[in-house]
Amino acid sequence: MILLKAETIPIKSNESEKVEVNSEKSDSNGESILSPMPGTFYSASSPESDPFVKVGDTVSKGDTLCIIEAMKIMNEIESEKSGVIKEVIVENGNPVEFNQPLFIIETS
Image 1 (tube, rainbow, N blue to C red):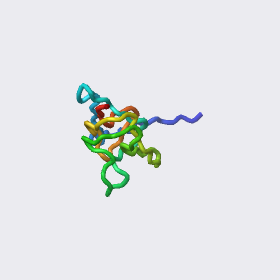
Image 2: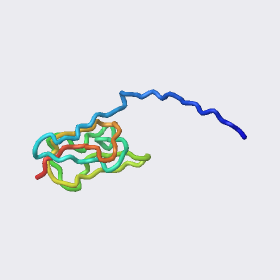
Image 3: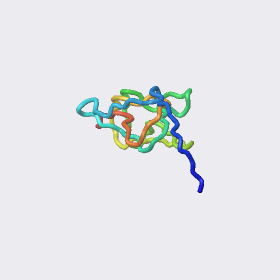
Image 4: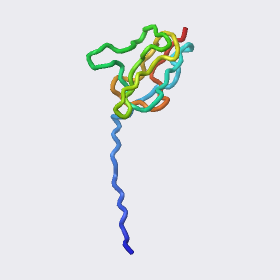
């Protein structure tokens, strides 16, 4: 019989990597647009490009809002509603979780 000694290895938490999320509605007419998957949030198609949407932009159903990179695949996230972007909650390049609010939209 072979006995193995289990060893506990301490893991340091890197607090700077945590992303604070405001999941509350910013105003009475605003609705959250949630992330459909975990990954990395990108506001534009490339670092040199303008963001897909900014605060105050009017979007229609089907417009591209952002890209979420998951497992090296770039997934375009489209708006499911028409309205005006009231808030962009996540910063470019930050990680996002499933169902994390990305934008606040005032539907029309």
